[in-house]
Length: 287
Image (spheres, rainbow, N blue to C red):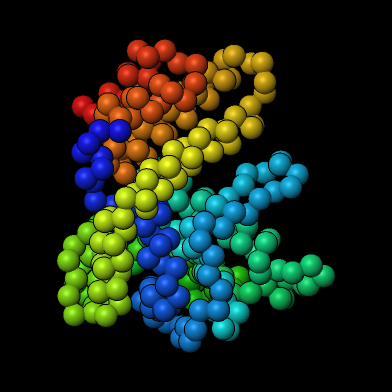
């Protein structure tokens, strides 16, 4: 890695930083209450970072949740930080909800009536719906009569860091400012968050952990992609390597890595692509 990378500031939207800041249960409760003002969250009871929901049969895709939380009233919250816009946010939210339900909200020998209230919250560094608002909330409605709601006991919320601040609560504005890396004053909760982020950036061990984590996650995605392909089919493997590289480059770029760093990383991943092919893909994102 270059010298400049070690000077890079890792903000709230970086996966590891996000987890380390959110592991404070009071701050996590405050963020949930800010995002979901319509309910009262008295106390966070359980909080899991980078929770893996694995599939023993290996026939379906594993999922790693950024923050999984339950509160005193039994509600379940999945909070995800999303940096790269891969145009599949709705399907991703649907899949995450299904995994949360399967692993946490419906115990064995229970009926569907026992499904716990679940909230899927995506903090996005992009405006996926494209309406310019800070907060989008989704439920199930009847198509011709929106007053008729299908009671699925689930809510999906998107927080858009690119939206307009005006017209929103001060706390929600500050949460978005934290995602943007802007200075926040006059709030004990965000004072904690900003101080914690500064401490993380000043800690060389944690900085190394961030880089190691990013590398392992990209390797994990590559293995995951390979799992569904038929072995021995060269064309399929080649298409898979191209698709994986196409997905990896914007993710690394969004996290602040430079062109040459990305080139060097991908060339060492044994993709089977030539250096010229890799360079051509990377250059598409650096015009």
